Structures are given as C-alpha cells and as structure tokens.
Amino acid sequence: MNEQRMLFPTKADTPVRDARSPLYHRHDPVTSREAAEHLRRSGRLGAQQQAVLEALRECNGATHAELGAFMGVHWLTPARRLPELARAGLVKKGQPRVCRVKG
Image 1 (tube, helix red, strand yellow):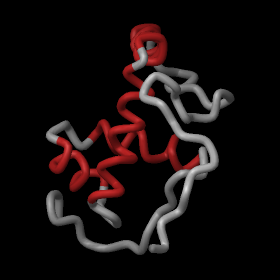
Image 2: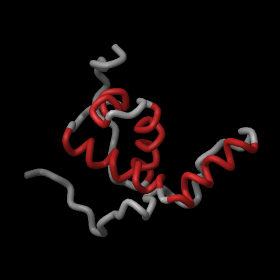
Image 3: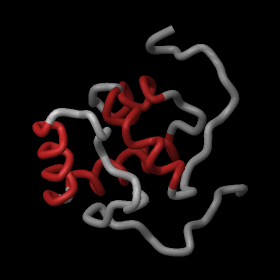
Image 4: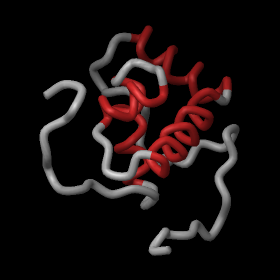
C-alpha cells in the first residue's frame, strides 16, 4: 500500500549506482580495481543490485546479513550493494536493531 514506486524500472543489466562513485577505494590494489570493472562490464553488478532490491521488498527492514541468508549469498554481497542503492535513492536505512543472523 505504502510502497514507493520507481519512476524508471531498473534492469538487471543496468546498474543503478551513481557513476561518479567508484566500486573500489583509491588505495586498493590493482586486482581490486580490475575485479570491480569486470563486475560492472559483465552485468553482474546490475544483477546483484536488482537481486538485493527484490530481496529487500520481500524482507522489508532486513539487515545485510539477513538479506544474504535469504538470498543464499555471502552477506558481503548485499552489504556492498545497499550503499549504492541508497545513493541512488532506492533504499534507505531503517532503525538500528539486533541482526538475527550476526547478532
């Protein structure tokens, strides 16, 4: 009922992250930069972002670890995608609470 509607649908092959925000840190090793670019070029970044969005719709208010458990992936995947989705204005942080997966 109170669900936020997106103006433009997102596709798994279209990342929603802010293009100005890199996927790696300035001082990360070259291999991290290469992996980040491969993730983007392969379309897996957009697919992961879409999967996290869909899981969050099913598990409203879940932590990244709870989302990872629900999705069957390591908790780090949603932990990395959630800030990108937040910068894009698609999700926002909820109230702090104890995680049911990590405590």
